[in-house]
Image (cartoon, rainbow, N blue to C red):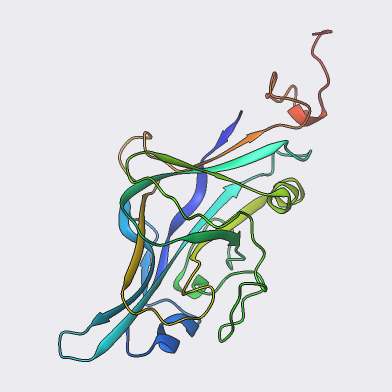
Length: 226
């Protein structure tokens, strides 16, 4: 089962906004964590008290990009593997992202989600790549099974882009009344033991998953009769 490393990973957020609409519906992030090693609030929808009194809201969304140019036949399955960190209170979906530039993440990508309508409940507008994630370990890898839509996009596109979005408040446009966060490690953390990865089983089986003289493993039935 080949493992792909992210070409991009990180969080874009809108921080300490005076209203829920300001936090969720903005088109540009106010804070970028594209080079963070790990975050306890990687995914977040928050209502909190401001230092001067009153209420502030935060929204954080995680983005991943993987190079899938070497996949020419639809994989049998695929799993997004994320190592959790510190918090697991935010349920979420993996949805299709459409960040502006391949290989980069910018503040303007805060709402770069396919089908997104800033002022709406987007439960039915976005393209979901997974079921809702309601259980998340903070002490190991979480294996998120990707659906047939994701497998098709892995095959048809040179890159696949994910957004991990909180499912009960951010996605549905329901103002939170507390802090809801889920944390995770990113590839910038020292070493590779906690790195996010995209694992898949190549089309035609998992017994041989290497390219041969530039031919994708999905197009190889056997090698020297084996």
